[in-house]
Image (cartoon, rainbow, N blue to C red; front, side):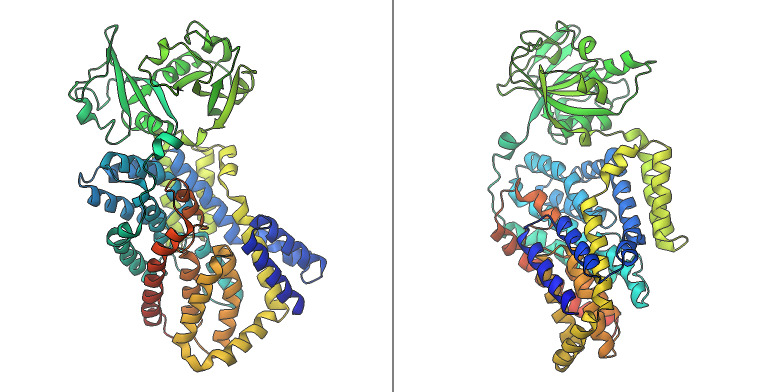
Length: 583
């Protein structure tokens, strides 16, 4: 018992100081449990095959398929067009984010909606600092509605059978999570904007690379016959049309009333993700991409197609030449989709003569990319931005099928998720490489190791001893006082620890106290789950970390805004939980 408690203290300190990455700390803990004989190898490694681990891994893959097929992005673009009023549009977006986050990872939801929200802020002339933190917080709020809303919810639910308790129902948390989300969104709508800073005014210019690309209009494109103002290219996609090619002529800097015709070649400037989003949504195609597919038709060359950024180096054969003159496609077998140059220019990509330092957005197979030599240096792999909306129906079917089967109990959730992932792989919606890459292994290792520690915590008698001491000490404050105490303590632990680790540490203690005092364990389970999921007062939550830099926030900004959300969560939980799950 002493050894287990000592390991717990050391682990908390290591988590709090981040002396090692959290997964490494978790593995050190597991190793100590094995070497000290506190767990047998079978007991220690059993958690890696836990249903919760399998379900989480599958959900990561399902979420990746929704991203790759552009489903979540299409939802974001649709929501951003619902209203022309700035405040109303932002509120629609945050509500949509909370809804999507109820069924997908809040971190993934924040990542997908981040560029959409930045584009929306630019279009509405709203400072990004006013909307990015609400984006992260809305995704966290939505995660409290279903059992798959966050990995923490799933971990707690998967642990309950060990204590002879029924796992959380798919929508069981909604009794308390939905009121918290609704009131929390109202706080984000009306209170948070008054507390948030406006520091991210030059975000686009300083941190986001914009590319020049040639775009071809397909015959069925909804853009044909519209003016540039009506097209939504700038409003909805943040793309600037710098020139138009028509009948062999180039029309520079067309105005907003310029009418687009079939066969036009647009020279547009925009961010990578926005270029690709327009390509998949508006019936347009990047000129270089069409040529590549025509050239490779019937070609036996195999390989996973990647999208990378490369920089033109000194002595490159591209210097002073256009793509055609340098025979780029013949030389490398790659397609140049866009060009970024520090000095603004409006020349069509096909006619641009390259300079040292130009950054090219290049698409091609792994084998071709490895053959580019020293004349082009890869800066970054941006394959994550590629979308294939043609397979969106299969992705939606697999995701909804898994949710319906799991939520109705027709099959266990883990089985439904594995079946859905198999469907995605068989239909090639997602490749095995993408699937493995989608899994957040750090989270899975952390959870598996902490599940093993939970077993040692109980078997050693440490959980029982701590529970008995707390029960004797806190019995005078009554069940509601106990519930409040565990909620607050869990919120405090989520700051130095991860959400999952805090829940796994607190849950056996709370259940032990409930058992000692002969109270219903369910209200304590729900309170700890909600408290662990709602981490608002620091930027250490992964969803918050995504917006921390772009919004140029400080730690105190999160404390100032997150404190109100934490109080709302606490008050509503103390009111609703005893009503729905009596002591």
